[in-house]
Image (cartoon, rainbow, N blue to C red; front, side):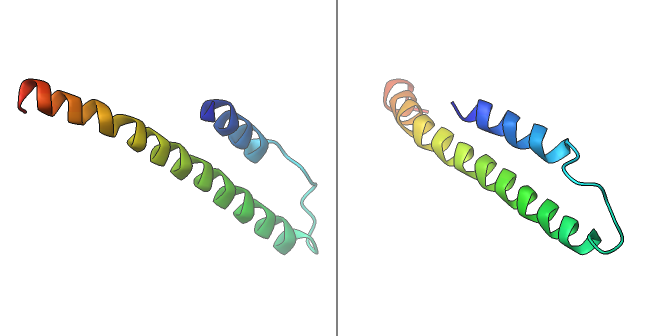
Length: 67
């Protein structure tokens, strides 16, 4: 589920979208920064979901094996 979003984010981040010109250098840098933030948000969301999914597994292990 989130892996496809992460793959798309990284593929899009590494593919050249615009030719780097002197006047457009700042705009392109800002765009890359926004893409990096978007990819970071996807990673954080995936980690949050994974944490939520692991909580019941951990609790079951604690109850079962008294870890």
